[in-house]
Image 1 (cartoon, rainbow, N blue to C red):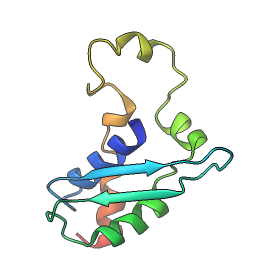
Image 2 (image 1 turned 120 degrees about the horizontal axis):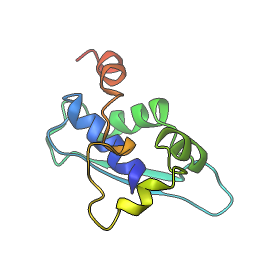
Image 3 (image 1 turned 45 degrees about the horizontal axis):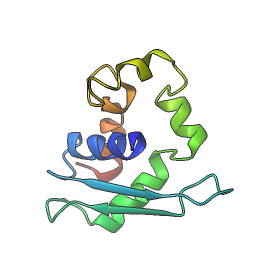
Image 4 (image 1 turned 120 degrees about the vertical axis):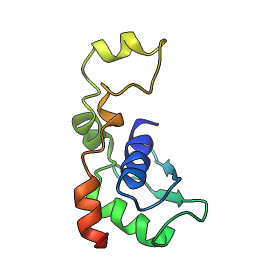
Length: 107
């Protein structure tokens, strides 16, 4: 959930789509996702397939990659969950990949 939101939020913030939904599938014993599905609901300025390639290139969606990037081992974030999962102080709400995505797509 956190990794998918982080990716989708950066895609929208970079202006690559007005809406974005990301689905990530994993298999036991495999560190990388076995499938990444991107849907921009027709609002993307590049194809969903090209976005999929960008995601694989710029985002480490392995469990270790997400734990490190999103600081998921920090214990205090779990105390806040009952209030809201979508607050600006969570790492998955940051849009720190915007410039890299814009440069990669020349937007």
